[in-house]
Amino acid sequence: MLDTLRFILNDALNLGFAYGLLALGIFISYRLLDFADLTAEGSFTLGGAFVAALIFNGANPFLATLLSIVVGFVAGIITGLLHTKLKIPSLLSGIITMTALFSINMILMGIGKTGKFDSAVYLGNSKTIYDYIGIFKQKYLNIIVVNFLVITLATMFCYWLFGTEFGMSLRATGMNQKMARAQGINTSFMIIIGLGISNALISLSGALTAQTNQSADCNMGVGTLVIGLASIIVGEAIFGKRSFLNWIISVALGSVLYYLIIGIAINLGLDSYLLKLLYAILIIIVLTAPFIKKGFMKLKRKES
Image (cartoon, rainbow, N blue to C red):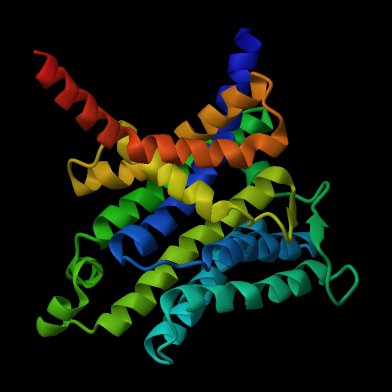
């Protein structure tokens, strides 16, 4: 029993901290910018494919991981430009970028293998950032520590950034674009940069996930948008959002709770093909919980 619980916790921490970056990225676009960005599924895979392709070909994993942030930022910028400059609706802008990234990711994963395109890269014995940071003998502990440090730094960066004048302007853009423009804020620029930062974090999440799994494939981004949104909702429901710092910490930790729930469900015998159904049910429960609570309180008052 203890071994099972330890396995579930390790798995939740391994994936939870890495996916916490995904949740933070989606939080910026969906919560702060109020922008329904579907680029996430493409930029997550982009980060994984990019870092895996570079490491597979002998690149330094630290440099590859840093560069994955840059390519994710560029992907977000493209979506922002499509929306603000070409006046393409937000949903369609994200879909266009995500669709284009599918081909780009296939090309990246084919570099050094077929030379054209491929659907996966397996790193095998190639060294990742976790192999260079040997704090513990067990690799899974190194993964947990490194991912925790990265999500902590990312959370601190977001807290600092969105407390600056630029960050406040970006948040104002998400709250009310017309009012923000009336205050002299360049809302188009804020949307472009905001989406760049969002997808940079998502791409970094993909890069860490690829190195954790020692592989990247073209389907690794499928469902990441749902996972990120579910992590945000679970984190907000459990930890709340009393202050902005509390809010972003809740988002970052939400993915750990989310994967803890998923891990428990799998160990209780839930088949893998039912996971998507569990995702949907979990989101419905968390979203409707406040309304159910209000209804229950009203019923209790009537009875008293």
